[in-house]
Length: 169
Length: 326
Image (cartoon, each protein chain N blue to C red):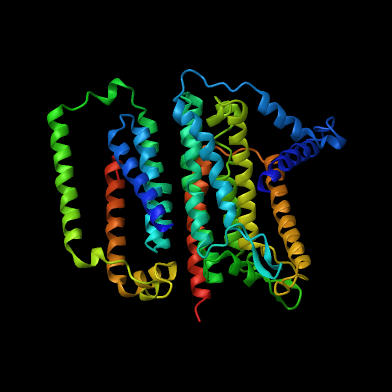
């Protein structure tokens, strides 16, 4: 059952990830990205990380992509404004780069010992692993410093965006 | 079961609106017009299903489904009665009692905007697009106060499990005041109520449809069952929102006099009845508000969301944090 779900979710992820870059119409790319996030959320669930899965949907699919859509709809690009496709050389280069990057991820994983092993029995994990409590304890306990610095970084980025967007502050 | 609520709700909406406007309302089909929703449904099915030539076909067909699914899915985790002993087995009265039910509802709920956004865009029509844009901005804006109000309740409840949230509200104070969260979190309740109206695109916040300005908004180009799906999605969202409101603030299925520990079928049915009665009351408020309040202007809507509700909700969380400290 888990294997089947894994295959299904991975297939959804792969197909929609491909669709994101191959669709010519940006709306369809955005839609594919939504389904990609959905598949990713299922994968997170299978990895016993329900909190991350929920966040994946709430933050990425629910908020960020809607903003993407917003921009795409407002621009409302016509066929001719989308521009001509870049030439075959560019595509070849991009494909080659993608393969190299994929190999860079796959090779170390195949080489390592732990990858071939299973995750082990469920009892090996901390009780309530991946739940909201577990993540919360980590965020506000062990990793409080990193968490807070990230939030300051995001705040700075937000203020930067406001400054750029406004002509006179 | 959930789908059956929709015709009842449509009927109630038409009758109550007539009552408020001092008219008769539908009263010809069946006793007191009770079969009017049936007639509506038959009409919807037999209407010609038109797909206009200028639409983006794939998204045009997909959008009503996307609008309909999230509210129907979200209802699955809401407990509508206390656990009962059925044939010697303990049964939870919720379709899918999940441990992180709250997270699930937030995740699924945030998907609701896609149906409307795609519907409006695919229609390839200025009014529909405007409606869709308004709705995406509105739903994203009001999701924030909604979630923040949620957080305050979760802080008092100390759990992400709906069954436990309700369980905690089933006690009474001083023997007669039900220990509902509305008494502990009145501000959060108010914020949630207002945000819920905006999330479900109901008057006074129905800017995405707004007949006088937008003809009908995102579903202008839809006909027959596709339109009906949008319509049902909207009403389902109302039902799910009301159920959520009842679960979080009004004690869910709990009611003074119902013992959640009894596990008998009769008591279980009584708890379901209590839940339904509360949801019905909230739904009546929805209809009542729709026919008595005028529509907001769009800038007023955004001001209310960002400058009033969000700061209030944040303050409420801070206050809850301080009050809750041991």
